[in-house]
Amino acid sequence: MKRSSGNRFVLLVSFIMISLLIWTVAPGLANVPQTTKKISVVASILPLGDFCQKIGGRHVDVSVLVPPGASPHAFEPSPSAVAKAAEAKVFVYVGAGLDPWAERLLKAERRPGQVVVEAVAGIPLIKEADEHEPGEAAAGEHEEGEHHHQHEAGNPHVWLDPVIAENICRNIAQALIKVDPAHKDAYQVNLAMYLGKLQTLDKDIKEVVATFSRRDYVTFHPAWAYFSQRYGLRQVGVIEASPGREPSPGQLQRIIAAIKKTGVKAVFSEPQLNSRVAEVIAQEAGVKVLILDPLGGSPPYGSSYLKLMRHNLAVLVQAMQ
Image (cartoon, rainbow, N blue to C red; front, side, top):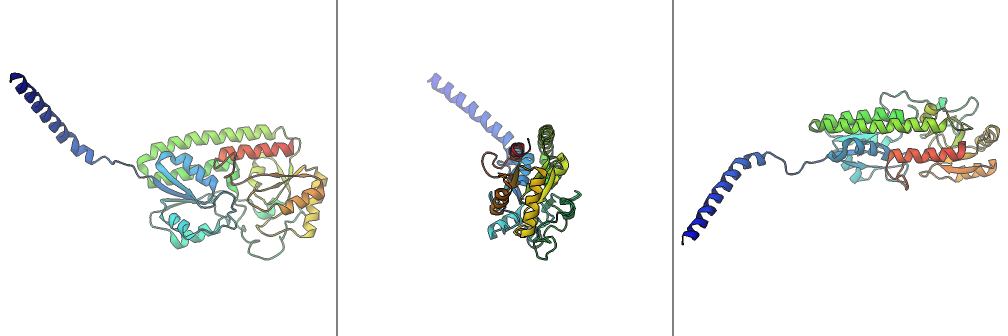
């Protein structure tokens, strides 16, 4: 009987202590969020989406509008994509006419409080006339049409220069901090780590390019102007200076003549564009077609910008060494 009473006493004391503990801690628990909602971020193309993910880390939910294999020049967002972009806390796009649908979307659907990052902002853009050698006019350069005027602000492919990419990443970090100051430290740490990787990429590219025995190349469209300017390569021919506008017979002959004169060993095409004309030129000039990818999304690099650029560097080695 005494033993039973002792057990009851122990149970009673335990109950009182647990009750006091709950009473003390419960008010504090009420103020602690059970789940942290991620910041919604929408990017127009994969490289920008990768920058957002690397800087935002576990605090962001990143969506990319242009799917792998598609060209941003011809892309049109679906109603669901428009809605997602409108609701995003941060919206990141290239600008300068690469993704004009993004600019239209912002004008029509932008919500109050949304922070927008334009990748080309603050960057001196290469003008179309600067992308060609004297006398080597681009296909359709003297013709009228919407494609000809699409990039009149300048070449928009700024992200393909890793040094310029650093500036884009800094702007993305500032945007994330503005909408989510509570995680400022995390964004700054992630930014510093990623900038270090971009700087290593820049150093590695310089070292590899220094071994090239030739610097001239012919490309499908002028995506590599900033990369070339950074690393001392020279674009001697462009098959499509404007998206969707095929070169005239005279321009084809000038490109073939430039290939033979400069000793170019390959014509660079892109996986997002039809390579038929590139293959015709390569066959006529007796060179091969290699693929440089400005956007990513395919194996072995997937959505990783760093892996994409190292893959493209390996392709350049095949043509330039």
